[in-house]
Length: 143
Image (cartoon, rainbow, N blue to C red; front, side, top):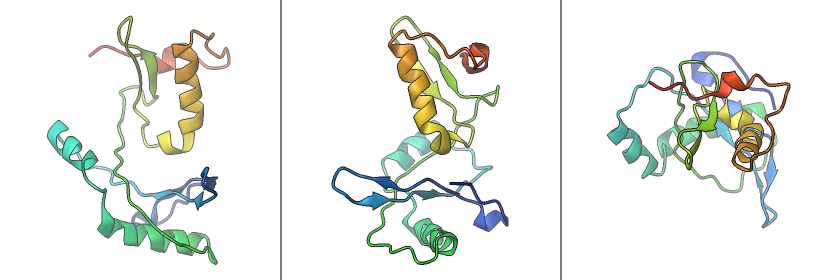
């Protein structure tokens, strides 16, 4: 689904509906809080929380505006963060002989998660890198 771009307070992304094994259909809507810089402790605390229930009301309003007639049965919130890399591309690379990384969505990971996961899984399984992608764009650049 396209990511609507409009006024800053209405900027969001909506993922395509996803049917869970129990038959429920889930639609994910997310917003970005760009410009917030959190410490490692703050990020840890955030992931141990239920996300932002207050902000969820705003997201539900956006979703209903974008998809009129959508029947919302239940809602839930899940914490999420946006991470950025210096290259602007995700890192899909080995950090050591035994540790690989898939990180740095640069604000696009939710929309690209299946493709990024496929790249990372292929790398871990020793599959060849897709030739249409420049491997160097996804390499870890040591700090």
